[in-house]
Structures are given as C-alpha cells and as structure tokens.
Image (cartoon, rainbow, N blue to C red; front, side, top):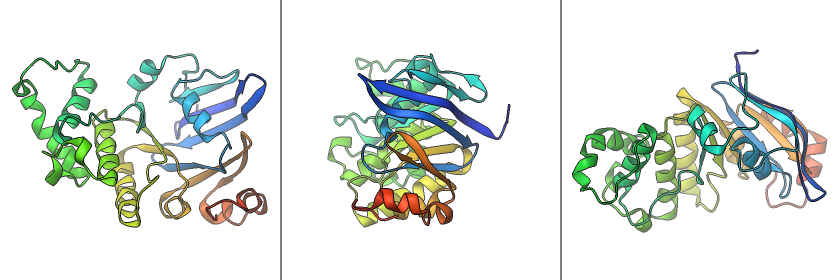
Length: 252
C-alpha cells in the first residue's frame, strides 16, 4: 500500500441501461494535495463523484480509501470514514442563521441528532467552535444572518463551513465556483487553498483559471475515460485535451 495515496480507484466502471458513463477509470489522489477532475459536459465527472460517495455502485472496479476497499459501503459509512462531499451532503437550512447551520453540522459530527424542540441554549457549547469556523471562511460578520438571506456566493461559502464542521479527511468539492461572479470566485478559490492545508481536496470545477491557480494534479475525463493527467502546465498543452475542449465555453 502506498501511504501517500489517500484515494484510489481501479477499473472503475458504471453503466446505465447500456450506456457506459464511466469506463475503467484508474484514479490516484495523493494525500495533502488539491486534485481537479475536469472535462467537457457529459464526460462522467459527476458519475465519478457519485461512485466515490456511494450514491451509485459501480458495475466493475474498486474504490480504496487509505488502502481499505470501500466499494460496497453505504454513503453514511463512507462519510464516517472522512470522505465528505460539499454542496450536497452539507446543504444549508435557509430558515436558520449561518451560526445555527454550522452548529447543526457540528452536532452531526458528534453523532447527536439536532433536536428542533430544544431551546437554542442547548447548542450554546458549540458556539465557540462554530464561530471559529465562520471566522475561518470569512463569514463571522454574517453569523446572525438567515442562510436563505445570504448572497449566493456567501451561501456557498457557508456550505463549505458546514462541511468543514464534519472535519473531513478527504473533501470532495462539486463545482464550488459555479454561478459566481469574479469577486466570489476569487474568495472561494483562496478559501479552498486555505482549507487544503490540513486535508486532501478532490474537486470538479469548470473554471479553468481556478483549476490552473490551485490544483496540484488534474485528471481530464472524456466520454467516461481518463484522457490525460498531470499538472496544469502539462495538461493544458496536450493536443487531445485541447481538442476535447474545442467548442466549449471554457478554454484550457
């Protein structure tokens, strides 16, 4: 077992009624790095994420996390191991404040269900940790704002905070800057770089500037298969990659 590799897939394949969405994907994610999964629309990126988080079970292949075969585990088992997918598992509650959302996530980490009928005082002991997380993501001044009232970019940032509350070892970010303006994109990009200091990040991202600026390794998918892999400087000049992206909105 290579201890430098936190996540590995071997021959990962997923078929839907005769359509092969992911074919023989061998992915190796190095511990402590930011690894980007990119590709044109329909390349299979979301299916790979769904396989890693057990929303789909592969037709063939294996998934190893820290050397352990987790292919057949349920989503909750995988999450408890420390693999957390942002923006799905960590969806915020719009009717609660930013602070309350982070406290709810902290309770989940502790394995205690949030008791809606209890007074807010019951969660008071989590205030300090929750505020520290909001401070870390630049949302301390928004602590009392209802999540539903936050601007879009801030709401996505809050989702990152609730994910960090689960203390993931491997953080899967599913298009973290999608739909954001330039200012929010830069803020979230800097945040991803910051939170990667003590964990591994695997992200699907369409914004090539973000990918270029913060990724250590890039895996390019096309039609469900790995087309190329390496640092941005290598991948961006690969003729096959450039051809795959021709006619799309983003340029490599």
